[in-house]
Amino acid sequence: MKWYYFSFFIILFISCSDKKRVPSELIQPAKMQAILMDILIIDAVNSIKQGADQSLNITDLNSKSIATVLENYQISDAAFKKSYSYYLAHPDILKPIADSISAIASRQVINSYSDTLNTHSNDTNIPDVKRRIRHRF
Image (cartoon, rainbow, N blue to C red):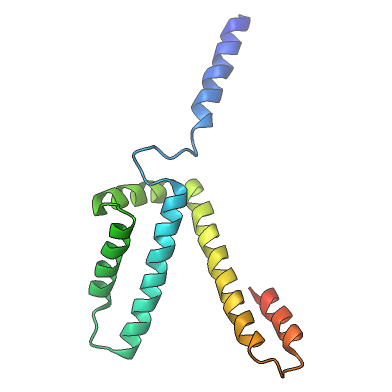
């Protein structure tokens, strides 16, 4: 009877241990994070371009840009779509990736504001402004 319980717990442990592991044929989380970050940046840049030139088609711009990003990472469109579908179906794996992207973007915004504030060295309230900006994000 002891072996029965022991076997049951071993099987249970093994079945639960790989739930957050991404299959090897898919894009792994670190690379997926980098790809998604690049796609989000390109989307933002294309939105700015479209704001300046209303004749631009944002869908075409994004499609071409995403193809370029995937080419740079040597990922096929089919492999990306398959991996992205997997991540969407597993929000427990996608959430840390999205949170990391958000944290990186927030740090970049803060750093760009800090760099801007550092260029205005005559302003006596710069430390106070920097502190308020950091607490805002």
